[in-house]
Each structure stands twice: as C-alpha cells, then as structure tokens.
Image 1 (cartoon, helix red, strand yellow):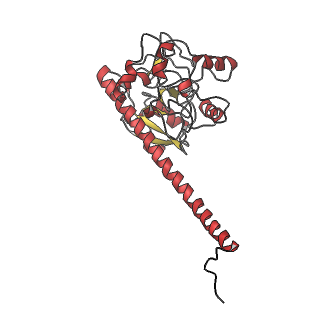
Image 2 (cartoon, rainbow, N blue to C red; image 1 turned 180 degrees about the vertical axis):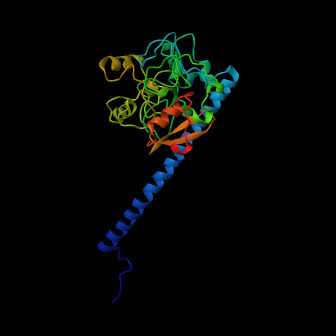
Length: 300
C-alpha cells in the first residue's frame, strides 16, 4: 500500500502541535514580561540617579537643595492657585533641559497660561516606564515624615520655601530620603508644580491601598479620572476639588507600578528599592532629615 506524499496532519496531530505551542507560549510569556519589567525598573532607577545628580549640582551651585515649592504663604494645598513652582522646574538646567527652563517665565505662577507651552512638555527623565498611564511626573520629593499640608516647617528635605543643605541631613545622607516614586500624580499637575504633583510624605504605607495615591491610580486606570498628561487644566482640577472628587489638603504618600515596592533616591546619591512591606515607622524615620533615630540597614 502506497502512502500519499501530500497527506497533511491528522486532527489528532494538529491538536497535539497546538497544545505544545500553547504550553511553550505560557512558559515563555512570564519570562518575557519579567525581563521587560527588569528593564523598566532599571530605567526608573537611572531616572532617579540622574535626578539625584541634578539636585547635587543645583546644591553645589546655590548652596542648598532646591525649594520643594515656592509660594508667598502656606500651607500649600492642591488647589491650583498661587505661585507654586516646584523643585522639578528648578533643576532642569542640570538635567540638560535648559531650553525648557528658558521657556518658563518665573515672574508668572506655575499655573499661568503663559507657562503652559513649557509645562506641557513631557520629559522622559521624569517618567517611570512601568507606570503604564498617561502622566508627566512619576517622582516626588519628600516633604515630611507624616501626612500634613506642605508648609515651611516640615521635616523632609523639600517643602515650602525650603533651603536645606547637605549639612542639614543630620541623620546622615545615606539614611535620608530625597525623593521616591508615586503611583499617580496625574490629576494634580505636572513636573513644574510644587503640590502633591511633585511632593509626598511618609504618612502612608508604601503602595498602601488606603492611601489617596493608590485610590487615585485606580480611578485613573478605570477611566473615572482622565489622565491630564499634556492636557492638564487647572480649571478641571479646581472643579474636581470643589466636587469632592479630589482632596485639596491631603498630600499623600509614595508608591509605584513595580511589583512589591518602589525606588527611592537617598541623600548619598544612591537609589534603593524599598519593599512595600517596610514598616511605616522605618519609612518615617528615613523621611525625617534630623530625628536622630538610628535605622538598621536590615530594616529595609
């Protein structure tokens, strides 16, 4: 009996081949996704390293770190009013963004229409690639060790009209947080504005589900709040505050889209990944520049 050379796969053989391919894909996809996340987390780490270098160069030039936010009086809330230029705008020349910096009119406020052309620019160095939602700031300076409105007497490094020098990091630069990741600053504004858009505190558990930052990120992902990105509008922000959709006087904490934790920039220029299981007491000690508390490296 001769076999037809044109005979194709039988149904059983086809099912087996499809099953084998499906198993291989199922095994490979997690590995590919994991590799991509490692690359994204590495890029995020590099972003914070560059921000740290820019902050140190600013301090070397001006004698202190940039102010967290500049305004005429405090406390500073999330309401889109006042001067409110933040640290993200001040360090631009040290991040090779002098052209954007030169287009900012510091005689006007950060919310002014005359600054919209510059403040609407998306700066990739301020974006964590893992965020996955429209945004124009993924990092925030640490203004305090507990939840409170941003004011002139806060315990962090970046707060209202602050002028903190390296010598003021009494607990030691290696044990003082300068900045960390945020899950979503999207509704409060962008990199130029010194509110919850670029300032946070350690009054909340890292990536904690009860934090306003976590809730805000969830609402953005489900479409309840549209990401502002390049389309941020102070009028929309004010209406959301007036309606109660966003809170004017709550600043919020740190968090990220990375699994199990977030990247933080410390005063010694290092970037460390803090796990979201970190004790709030330890996180608060790292956020306070001069509380005198000794923090064991094994605690984080």
